[in-house]
Length: 507
Ligand code: AMP
Ligand code: MG
Image 1 (tube, rainbow, N blue to C red):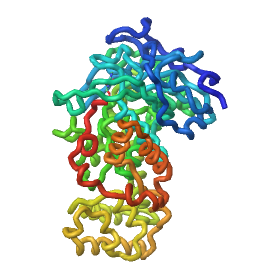
Image 2: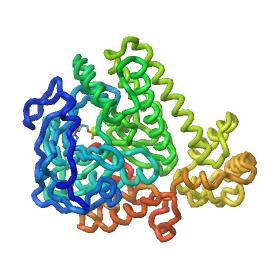
Image 3: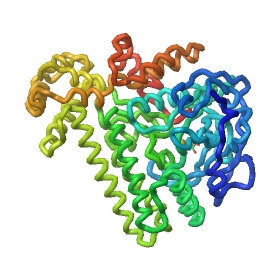
Image 4: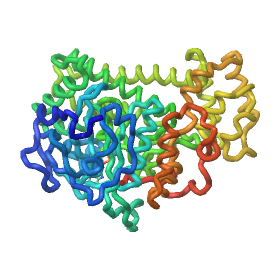
């Protein structure tokens, strides 16, 4: 098996779009550019801690390369750069953002198409603004484990290849409350067809640089959407409708598995409809559509679970606005938002049909789902456990579902049995259990699970990381050996612990 050195490295983004004439340098505005060349910062003591063997096989490399994947020793053919992009953060235009702590090493040709390898946490770039360009072990474990888990759940996502600790301590104020502490540094190598975001386009329109916008659109479509052409309005609308549909599919999957991204800023929206930038994300435990894990967003909860479909549409509208200068008839762009809504509705209905084992979704089923949503919020109820137990229920009796409730004394038994009977007669006592078992995962990466893995890793023990990495490769399979520990509701200790119920963007 080859190593990183023996791969053929491509640098299409750098060769096909305009860039910065300076290499690296201080934090600054970089007008009229899509990227800046940078030199990653080597780790003083790079140690490989986690490795995705499937991802390695996919790109055709053998285990190793900690030095390069820790920011040192770029191999021949790599032309590392940081991407320039902008974005709307929490609803407001934030201007130039860019890869402040991400550095792309290059692209490689794989059996699965061209893939970009990017280091997260390998040091400063012109887009680092006031920050250090580094990442801590805590957030790197969260990104590695969650992106791999999402892939195995069938949710479109960027992937992870490796996690390397740098041997460096990094100062972070986790809750922004004036109590900074040192944490071990780490670098994840993540992989996607590209890391182009909605904000990658927005920045050029915002600065009036239509020529660069056009070049970037042409590069993106040529490289990543080979079935599309953007030579006229019809082509542009078809391509953007594809982006809309991919985004709708991604968000429908998030809703299905109870994932809350936490920071759906337009700079965190992949043009490929992939889940990207794992920061203060979380998983619904207690079924509460108003929940967000991100404490930075606690006042308006803009990015709460139940609002993710609407936010994706809002973000898409910002992307569409940024493409107005390329359109002969900009009003045609409205059709793309319709494409999003239509696609989301189709996926969402299919999702509910699968989650509830219906053969297909009818209009009558809408009230069945609505009533279920209300009931799930009556008392604290674990989403994952509830749906998983529903797959295996022998008769319409809430007693089969008790493990999902935090307090079995307060369960509204009559209301539940009424709903269960309604559902049971809808499926004639025969829910499509195979669909249900594929739509309702048994194991997800709850925040407290990630936190236990992090706590152990901080003591040098990566066995919990490994156990979760391995278990989450088969999230739909029964793995009874793990149930006592991981098929469980949030433990009491995690209710108000930092990193479990509360997360910040600090990473
Ligand atoms: P995020 O919230 O992770 O999407 O990051 C928003 C912006 O802040 C992006 O431009 C990041 O590159 C930048 N950023 C976040 N953390 C750091 C860091 N430690 N060093 C440099 N830039 C950062
Ligand atoms: Mg980001």
